[in-house]
Image (cartoon, rainbow, N blue to C red; front, side, top):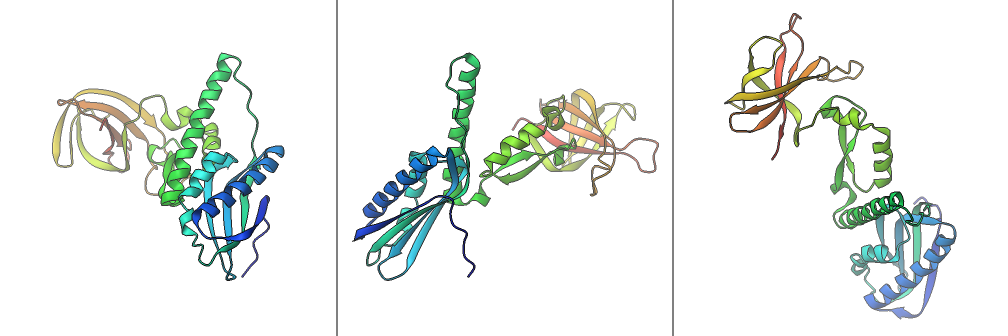
Length: 287
């Protein structure tokens, strides 16, 4: 088997007497964490991965690991994540020693104390981010990182290409992505529907004039009369991207039917070309 590279931070503790229950395991973890946290604080370091290995009296070993969405050395948070996994370590005939290692370490920048309104706002945002990352960590360690995802922005003005689902544990990438993608690139100037379909659904639309707003449409076999329409919002095609969609100009309309339900319709293509334009429902406003 290939050897793992040495951990950036590690601490080992032999047991004077073999540890026989979870109380001894919990005590050893707390002691080792305190040693590492003190050294890491001096170096302004935190870790996204923490691994506890127990060395058994019969020569075997067992280990548990927790992952964090961003570097941390917060004792309460890390110990809480470990608490759900310590029972996976079976003491057996006793544990002779423990090893706590870190992985994926990075610098933790110090924060300015809140002296003015802007600093208080920054502190509030940081507290919210810490609380959110803590929730993500607990869910990811319990259900697996791949099962906890969020919608991340993508540089594209085509709505169905302007986001993608990624692991929620990659919180560090989340901030950078939102900083790189301008708000108007993702959301444009008009509002977007609460529910956006992965694939636009075809609809039969009737308009007073070819290029005018829709008057009524049939979608999912149900006819709907339009009472109000706003638009169009034109989205140009991304001709440089491969794929069957996004190769024609789209004109989006926000419409409302006689029952007060609002839809996001678009006409793809222009009149006068080789192919007649098609109409699609791309999303609905509200639940």
